Amino acid sequence: KIIVVDFGGQYTQLIARRVREAHVYCEIVPFDAAMDRLTSEDVRGYILAGGPNSVNDPGVPMCDPALLDLGKPVLGICYGAQLMAKLLGGIVDKPETGEYGGVDVVYDERCALFAGLNPNSTVWMSHNDAIVKMPQGFVSAAHTPHCPIAAMAREDQQLYALQFHPEVQHTKLGFDILKKFLYDICHCAEEWIIGDLAGGMIASLKAEIGDRRVLSALSGGVDSAVASVLVHKAIGDNLTCIFVDHGMLRKNEAERVLQVYRDEFGMNLIFVDAKERFLSKLKGVTDPEEKRKIIGTEFIRVFEEEAAKIGSPEILVQGTIYPDVIESGVGHANTIKSHHNVGGLPENMAFTKIVEPLRGLFKDEVRALGVALGIPASQVWRQPFPGPGLAVRILGEITPYKLKIVQDSDAILREEIAAAGLERDIWQYFTVLPNVRSVGVMGDGRTYDELVAIRAVTSSDAMTVDFARIPYEILAKISSRIIAEVDHVNRVVYDVTSKPPGTIEWE
Ligand code: XMP
Image 1 (cartoon, rainbow, N blue to C red):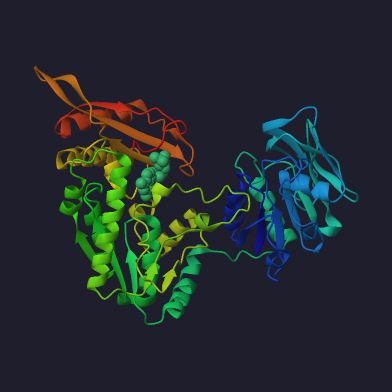
Image 2 (cartoon, rainbow, N blue to C red):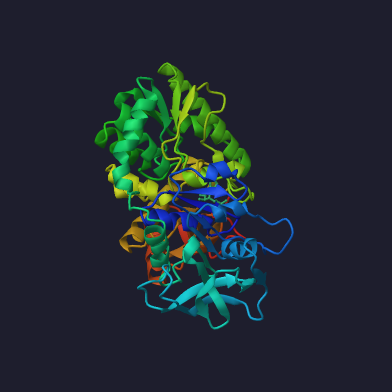
């Protein structure tokens, strides 16, 4: 495996995902991890990732210099490159001209990182500092107009450093360079193939669980679904899935989940129709956080009641994935907002064990695994959906009348986005009922009716988003269909706010 050392850079996870895309297993480890965690025999090489700091500032993240002296290959990227230079006696300083964005580069083909690649290419730069003097024994292996040391290497010690970012798509040959490091320099084999992993995962789940009974809260979301299907394949009917329909789901969603997991996969699934129960608890409630709290608490109650009915299985399966558990040492990961845990683990239930089969996987790997397990694409590529569901898309009190408007308009939006082939380009897309009425004219008469807003955003992690640039013709079609087909709607608007300052949801 490869160890990616994290110094708090925004691209660390991207580097790790690229390594895995090259079918090499890797783990992200914080810069201050103890050496014995970094030095197991199966480690074939290290990547020192980027970071927001300057290596010359006091107290910035550093790794143990001994890492550069293990006789194993090391690739420094951006901050990691500068750190390598500094730790080995080179000089890092602010150059006269910084470089940002795509710049022309010339690679030295004699360096194993670039052998056989087109020497004239483009790289993505983003740095304030640069290596101005290389440590002893290093040679420059690439240059750009303003950066004579865009890459440096000391090949007798297998030490390599790149000032630019090979992990981003704007660096044209970036993936090739990473692969050269992995295959030619670290001698890794292409062994990390998601489809091939399923069998082993199922076998080890079988061994881990034995004949004990397991419970799962199936929400229809990708992670919980893939985790549950894996466990089901391992232990069959000893897994019970509980699916709670709190009434705030999208149109036909509950039916679809039942059809896929109960009918097609034959899973032991308890379907709880709790629509009335949730609606009555939410009656008259208008505050968003209050709504979240009620739904979260009630969800846990329903879940506990159902679990008790079947004699409370002792193991819980959860769809935790790798980005949820990466420790960073720099305090930037794990910034999940507390309110996003609604629908999460019932904390006071007594499970003797939690099984998290996806703990080591990135989201794209979970999807690939889902496909390999035969889960339909519509489920595997489902957009993120908040635990409290449509409750945070209906501003103010939730009523069946409002739920129907949001469900029907949302279904039309989804149909049209699918018809336009935009499903995978847009991170989330849905309709919102802001509780606003406005005047319109339909047929011969004046109307005074509901306004529906369309929210559609592009993003890679939901932390920052841009509003999606859906073509006007498609928006026009969605708008006229919603007004024509959904009762009580006479106006449709498009939300053109990014995040920050907006959030994705309206509540
Ligand atoms: P915001 O609106 O904060 O949303 O930009 C970021 C992401 O989180 C989802 N979201 C939630 N998920 N429970 C959840 O499970 C919640 O209460 C909740 N609120 C927002 C939202 O859909 C987006 O993906």
